[in-house]
Length: 234
Figure 1 (cartoon, rainbow, N blue to C red):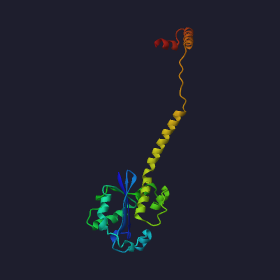
Figure 2 (figure 1 turned 60 degrees about the vertical axis):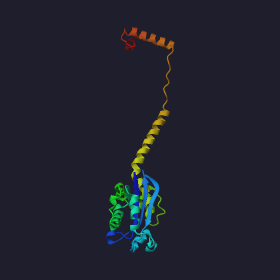
Figure 3 (figure 1 turned 90 degrees about the vertical axis):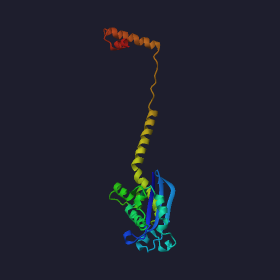
Protein backbone atom coordinates (compact mmCIF):
# COMPACT_ATOMS: atom_id res chain seq x y z
CA UNK A 1 0.00 0.00 0.00
CA UNK A 2 1.53 3.30 -1.13
CA UNK A 3 0.52 6.49 0.65
CA UNK A 4 1.73 10.06 0.27
CA UNK A 5 1.70 12.51 3.19
CA UNK A 6 1.10 15.88 1.56
CA UNK A 7 1.14 19.54 2.62
CA UNK A 8 1.22 22.95 0.98
CA UNK A 9 1.89 26.55 2.00
CA UNK A 10 0.13 29.37 0.18
CA UNK A 11 -0.02 33.13 -0.31
CA UNK A 12 -3.36 33.30 1.48
CA UNK A 13 -6.46 31.37 2.43
CA UNK A 14 -8.68 31.34 -0.66
CA UNK A 15 -7.72 30.17 -4.16
CA UNK A 16 -10.87 31.76 -5.57
CA UNK A 17 -9.35 35.15 -4.66
CA UNK A 18 -6.24 34.45 -6.72
CA UNK A 19 -4.06 33.06 -3.96
CA UNK A 20 -1.43 30.55 -5.04
CA UNK A 21 0.72 27.70 -3.75
CA UNK A 22 4.24 28.70 -2.73
CA UNK A 23 5.49 25.43 -1.23
CA UNK A 24 4.51 21.80 -1.72
CA UNK A 25 5.88 18.70 -0.02
CA UNK A 26 5.02 15.03 -0.41
CA UNK A 27 6.52 12.22 1.68
CA UNK A 28 6.20 8.58 0.59
CA UNK A 29 5.07 5.78 2.89
CA UNK A 30 4.74 2.14 1.78
CA UNK A 31 3.02 -0.41 3.99
CA UNK A 32 2.99 2.12 6.83
CA UNK A 33 6.74 2.71 6.68
CA UNK A 34 8.45 5.87 5.49
CA UNK A 35 10.66 5.05 2.51
CA UNK A 36 12.84 8.17 2.58
CA UNK A 37 11.52 9.27 -0.83
CA UNK A 38 10.01 12.72 -0.89
CA UNK A 39 9.25 15.67 -3.15
CA UNK A 40 9.78 19.21 -1.85
CA UNK A 41 9.55 22.34 -3.98
CA UNK A 42 9.19 26.08 -3.39
CA UNK A 43 7.11 27.87 -6.01
CA UNK A 44 7.14 31.45 -7.29
CA UNK A 45 3.48 32.55 -7.21
CA UNK A 46 3.98 35.75 -9.29
CA UNK A 47 1.99 37.70 -6.71
CA UNK A 48 2.25 39.16 -3.22
CA UNK A 49 1.88 37.10 -0.05
CA UNK A 50 -0.62 38.14 2.63
CA UNK A 51 1.01 39.42 5.80
CA UNK A 52 -0.99 36.94 7.88
CA UNK A 53 0.23 34.05 5.76
CA UNK A 54 3.86 35.20 6.10
CA UNK A 55 3.48 35.19 9.87
CA UNK A 56 2.43 31.53 9.68
CA UNK A 57 5.09 30.14 7.33
CA UNK A 58 7.76 32.86 7.20
CA UNK A 59 8.18 32.61 3.40
CA UNK A 60 8.76 35.98 1.70
CA UNK A 61 8.30 37.07 -1.94
CA UNK A 62 12.03 37.84 -2.09
CA UNK A 63 12.90 34.25 -1.19
CA UNK A 64 10.67 32.95 -3.99
CA UNK A 65 11.92 35.23 -6.77
CA UNK A 66 14.28 32.65 -8.28
CA UNK A 67 12.05 29.62 -7.65
CA UNK A 68 10.18 27.74 -10.42
CA UNK A 69 6.51 28.36 -11.23
CA UNK A 70 3.97 25.65 -10.49
CA UNK A 71 3.82 24.94 -14.22
CA UNK A 72 7.49 23.93 -14.03
CA UNK A 73 6.92 21.33 -11.31
CA UNK A 74 3.38 20.15 -12.08
CA UNK A 75 4.36 17.08 -14.08
CA UNK A 76 6.96 16.06 -11.50
CA UNK A 77 4.36 16.48 -8.77
CA UNK A 78 1.58 14.40 -10.37
CA UNK A 79 4.08 11.68 -11.34
CA UNK A 80 5.21 11.43 -7.72
CA UNK A 81 1.70 11.11 -6.26
CA UNK A 82 0.22 8.99 -9.02
CA UNK A 83 -1.73 5.97 -7.79
CA UNK A 84 -1.14 6.68 -4.11
CA UNK A 85 -3.59 7.50 -1.33
CA UNK A 86 -3.01 11.06 -0.14
CA UNK A 87 -2.91 11.78 3.60
CA UNK A 88 -3.58 15.48 4.25
CA UNK A 89 -4.45 17.48 7.37
CA UNK A 90 -7.46 19.68 6.59
CA UNK A 91 -7.57 18.17 3.11
CA UNK A 92 -10.18 20.50 1.54
CA UNK A 93 -7.75 23.43 1.89
CA UNK A 94 -4.81 21.78 0.10
CA UNK A 95 -6.97 19.96 -2.44
CA UNK A 96 -8.70 23.22 -3.35
CA UNK A 97 -5.39 24.95 -4.05
CA UNK A 98 -3.91 22.01 -5.96
CA UNK A 99 -7.01 21.68 -8.13
CA UNK A 100 -6.86 25.40 -8.88
CA UNK A 101 -3.20 25.14 -9.94
CA UNK A 102 -3.93 22.10 -12.13
CA UNK A 103 -6.96 23.80 -13.66
CA UNK A 104 -4.87 26.83 -14.63
CA UNK A 105 -2.60 24.44 -16.54
CA UNK A 106 -5.60 22.67 -18.12
CA UNK A 107 -4.64 19.45 -16.36
CA UNK A 108 -7.09 16.96 -14.85
CA UNK A 109 -7.94 17.45 -11.14
CA UNK A 110 -6.15 15.80 -8.26
CA UNK A 111 -8.62 12.91 -8.01
CA UNK A 112 -7.51 11.69 -11.44
CA UNK A 113 -3.92 11.25 -10.25
CA UNK A 114 -4.30 9.71 -6.80
CA UNK A 115 -6.16 6.82 -5.20
CA UNK A 116 -8.30 8.85 -2.83
CA UNK A 117 -7.66 11.36 -0.05
CA UNK A 118 -7.73 10.81 3.72
CA UNK A 119 -8.29 13.92 5.84
CA UNK A 120 -6.52 13.46 9.18
CA UNK A 121 -8.33 16.47 10.63
CA UNK A 122 -11.71 14.80 10.03
CA UNK A 123 -10.32 11.55 11.41
CA UNK A 124 -9.00 13.28 14.54
CA UNK A 125 -12.32 15.05 15.11
CA UNK A 126 -14.07 11.68 15.02
CA UNK A 127 -11.64 10.17 17.51
CA UNK A 128 -11.38 13.24 19.76
CA UNK A 129 -14.64 15.21 19.50
CA UNK A 130 -14.71 18.59 21.17
CA UNK A 131 -10.92 18.77 21.51
CA UNK A 132 -8.26 20.76 19.68
CA UNK A 133 -7.13 18.74 16.68
CA UNK A 134 -4.64 20.95 14.88
CA UNK A 135 -1.25 19.42 14.10
CA UNK A 136 0.46 20.85 17.19
CA UNK A 137 -2.29 19.56 19.49
CA UNK A 138 -2.14 16.10 17.92
CA UNK A 139 1.64 16.00 18.24
CA UNK A 140 1.31 16.75 21.94
CA UNK A 141 -1.48 14.19 22.39
CA UNK A 142 0.48 11.39 20.71
CA UNK A 143 3.93 12.25 22.00
CA UNK A 144 5.35 13.37 18.63
CA UNK A 145 8.28 15.77 19.06
CA UNK A 146 7.42 19.02 17.25
CA UNK A 147 9.88 21.33 18.99
CA UNK A 148 11.46 22.17 15.61
CA UNK A 149 8.14 23.56 14.35
CA UNK A 150 8.52 27.24 15.12
CA UNK A 151 6.88 28.10 11.77
CA UNK A 152 4.73 26.08 9.40
CA UNK A 153 6.79 24.36 6.71
CA UNK A 154 5.42 21.86 4.22
CA UNK A 155 8.18 19.25 4.49
CA UNK A 156 8.46 19.33 8.30
CA UNK A 157 4.68 19.28 8.62
CA UNK A 158 4.52 16.20 6.37
CA UNK A 159 7.02 14.38 8.56
CA UNK A 160 5.10 15.28 11.72
CA UNK A 161 1.79 14.34 10.12
CA UNK A 162 3.17 10.95 9.10
CA UNK A 163 3.91 10.16 12.77
CA UNK A 164 0.52 11.49 13.87
CA UNK A 165 -1.33 9.54 11.17
CA UNK A 166 0.33 6.28 12.22
CA UNK A 167 -0.65 6.98 15.84
CA UNK A 168 -4.22 7.87 14.84
CA UNK A 169 -4.71 4.70 12.82
CA UNK A 170 -2.80 2.07 14.76
CA UNK A 171 -4.22 2.53 18.27
CA UNK A 172 -6.67 -0.39 18.29
CA UNK A 173 -4.35 -2.53 16.20
CA UNK A 174 -1.49 -2.06 18.63
CA UNK A 175 -3.77 -2.69 21.60
CA UNK A 176 -5.02 -5.91 20.05
CA UNK A 177 -1.54 -7.12 19.21
CA UNK A 178 -0.32 -6.23 22.69
CA UNK A 179 -3.14 -8.11 24.36
CA UNK A 180 -2.58 -11.15 22.16
CA UNK A 181 1.14 -11.18 22.94
CA UNK A 182 0.48 -10.81 26.67
CA UNK A 183 -2.14 -13.61 26.56
CA UNK A 184 0.22 -15.93 24.71
CA UNK A 185 3.01 -15.19 27.17
CA UNK A 186 0.70 -15.74 30.13
CA UNK A 187 -0.34 -19.12 28.70
CA UNK A 188 3.31 -20.10 28.24
CA UNK A 189 4.13 -19.00 31.80
CA UNK A 190 1.20 -20.95 33.21
CA UNK A 191 2.21 -24.05 31.27
CA UNK A 192 5.71 -23.86 32.69
CA UNK A 193 4.47 -23.24 36.23
CA UNK A 194 1.89 -26.05 36.21
CA UNK A 195 3.29 -29.29 37.80
CA UNK A 196 3.50 -32.18 35.38
CA UNK A 197 1.72 -35.41 36.52
CA UNK A 198 4.00 -38.31 37.49
CA UNK A 199 2.79 -41.77 36.38
CA UNK A 200 4.00 -44.73 38.47
CA UNK A 201 3.28 -48.33 37.45
CA UNK A 202 1.84 -50.60 40.17
CA UNK A 203 4.08 -53.43 41.39
CA UNK A 204 3.01 -57.10 41.28
CA UNK A 205 2.52 -57.06 45.06
CA UNK A 206 0.22 -54.02 44.77
CA UNK A 207 -1.75 -55.61 41.94
CA UNK A 208 -2.28 -58.82 43.97
CA UNK A 209 -3.39 -56.78 47.00
CA UNK A 210 -5.82 -54.83 44.82
CA UNK A 211 -7.29 -58.03 43.36
CA UNK A 212 -7.74 -59.51 46.87
CA UNK A 213 -9.51 -56.39 48.05
CA UNK A 214 -11.91 -56.46 45.10
CA UNK A 215 -12.64 -60.14 45.74
CA UNK A 216 -13.42 -59.44 49.38
CA UNK A 217 -15.72 -56.55 48.46
CA UNK A 218 -17.48 -58.71 45.88
CA UNK A 219 -18.18 -61.44 48.46
CA UNK A 220 -19.41 -58.92 50.99
CA UNK A 221 -21.70 -57.25 48.46
CA UNK A 222 -22.91 -60.62 47.16
CA UNK A 223 -21.86 -59.92 43.60
CA UNK A 224 -23.25 -56.41 43.29
CA UNK A 225 -19.88 -54.66 43.39
CA UNK A 226 -19.62 -52.37 40.37
CA UNK A 227 -15.84 -52.61 40.31
CA UNK A 228 -16.03 -56.31 39.96
CA UNK A 229 -18.67 -56.02 37.20
CA UNK A 230 -16.56 -53.48 35.29
CA UNK A 231 -13.46 -55.61 35.75
CA UNK A 232 -15.32 -58.63 34.42
CA UNK A 233 -16.68 -56.62 31.50
CA UNK A 234 -13.24 -55.56 30.47
